[in-house]
Picture (tube, rainbow, N blue to C red):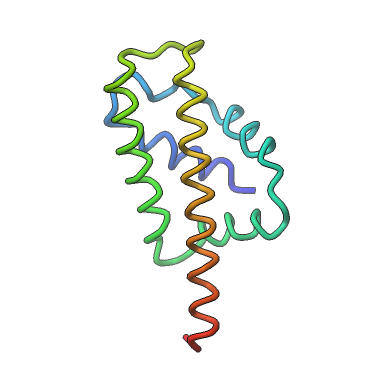
Length: 116
């Protein structure tokens, strides 16, 4: 799976938010993905989403997570590694990822049934 690419998206979303970058590691993200127990179809959709040439949904995922993480940082102040903020950031990223998996799936179905 493309955990490295997802982690790059995660980290780049936090570049402009002070104190959040580096809080979650790639291993943390891998663990969060493993806990979700995605089926083969979802894993294939994640890969297709990452490899999609247009990248609209992936860019939207990044922008949405960036805004939500900024709001979270404003509410919580400076973060530490043991802070529950780490868990919240992972939960927000994973729920956003799931939303965009569903959106991508629906987009594929619409293209199929619309003949495009």
